[in-house]
Length: 321
Image (tube, rainbow, N blue to C red; front, side, top):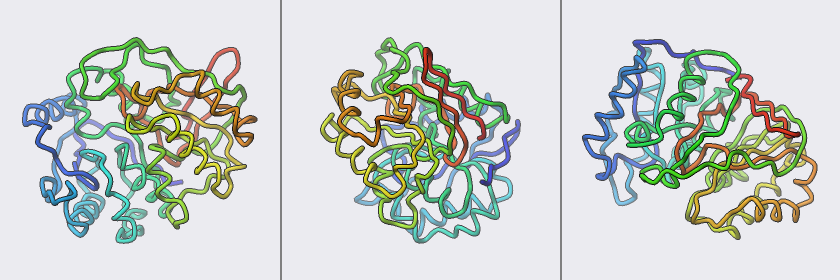
């Protein structure tokens, strides 16, 4: 495990687009708001060379995205790398990455959604702890940013154990404005577990199956979430696909992110889904945790260590990050 150095005031962030490039809907006003909020944390923002390049797949050429990734890791002034957005193309980069460069220049890389494939591959191939958390664009959102910022700071500015608690309110879509009451964590299966964190967006994680970039599931706590495009039948299929992977029988626990309303997922439906799969019956599982395609969200370390306790109450503690 290689944990990158923590941040301090005055450190520089590099914003890159390994998946989707800046999109027109992310206005100059949003960008300035994101810069302002990160500046309030004492962080300076700089940008990758090819951030605005856009082809028919809404992204930049592979060689240009690799150039920006390698430049960010090799630049000694850069302490944290934030992705712009998710999308559907970051797995194109995996065979072109210089993993020795990454290993020898450890620093924070943070993003979510499609960045799941990049973050898990970097951890698998180099041992670097990477992070599922807010994109740069998340800091330009109008609402529900305080909780997100709080957990971003807890993860990146000190080494203390992070006691994860549910948000009080949430947005069904990150760019939405209607604040909904959060039900809190769902206890699906009781138990206690400690393990190494892998995962993120479930569809994107599953794209790594059968490759050298897929993380070993042995002794892991798996984080998974799906977005509004996936209904309950699709979610079932994606979970089953993960169950069929080598060493799934050695998974110690599962943390499931909050589902968007469009999936039609409820606690009762999820409990029924879990009960159809004998591989899931004897491990602790919780759901409706603040990460994924809603807002706000926690930041969690891929390759870090977590302890989960599901008894009369739920305790979720990130031990190493």
